[in-house]
Image (cartoon, rainbow, N blue to C red):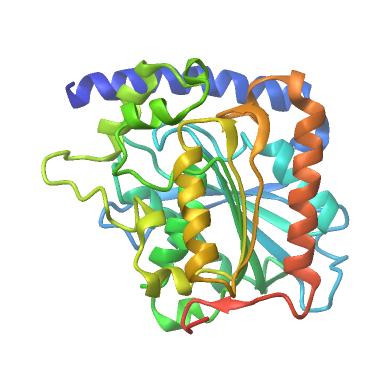
Length: 333
């Protein structure tokens, strides 16, 4: 499939996404609307440009932090197969976090494939972390209390970005204290073929259409010839032990029951339990759901509210329990 065709196909889907996001924000509650946006230059990637960081702030920001040091920070990565999506699409989640934890949420508008294939998106998210750490005082943030969340492709980033951040300059690493990860139906092992993922789904008819996978995979993993699908930055579930050890010690994973990505999440869970027993792991398969279940329909709004509230409970522990595990990327756990 030509790069031109991939770009054309991605462009059409992005327009549909844009209409959905615009409609949701226009007709939805005002609490779902972003508080402000910062456009920042990219420095980590060889592909120079700019990205948007969209902020969702709690009521009273910037004058009412729970602690004098500033507001805790959640950095969120949206899904969309690395090719489509918008930093505002997780507004129900990010607004819930802001309201229930009194934290500031920064949702990253990383650049998308096929125009910007691997590893540009990851590097953009690292740039966002560096920016937030550098500008913490201006933004009233206590970045020593930072957590990361993500959905699907963003769930992949919720692990691969901290791994890539380990390579940043010590000065940048020292400004971000990663306390935890909350990851929804993440992609963790890109060495698995789509056919194998589909076969592992107990209800394969709930998988996304093949036409989307035919867009996502060749767009992001480019050029395919010689591509290292076992790289920890695309398959974080396969990362070496020394890299996994430096991930935050508090990890929450929410796979969907009917999802081809569930099996690799369960293998990663087993690895964490066996080889990293010092990490605090909460792993919960969300029964009766498929990939992207929380975005697709209001039919599951009650379940979404319950799961999001549980996720916020874990974030409150990460942010406000002074004995919560704290991993700075420049030191071993």
